[in-house]
Length: 69
Image 1: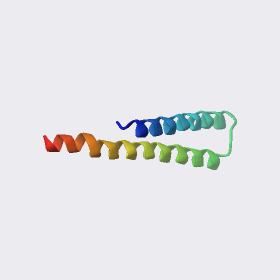
Image 2: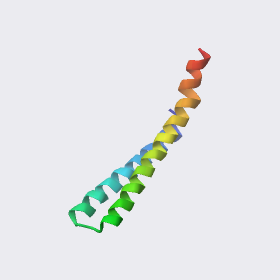
Image 3: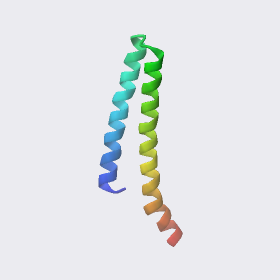
Image 4: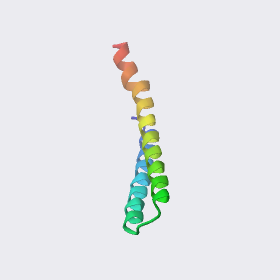
């Protein structure tokens, strides 16, 4: 994996980790359901972004190398 992409994905995942901790706190504090759902949606999109970047990297490097060989 390209070092820049790896660093970017790790930063995103650390952000997601913080968001999930925030979600736990929101639930502990009985926060408004719509706010919790909005935060869940944000976490899901952040994870999708990491997945898209990993897939892009996989197709660019791993899959293309396999096809060539």
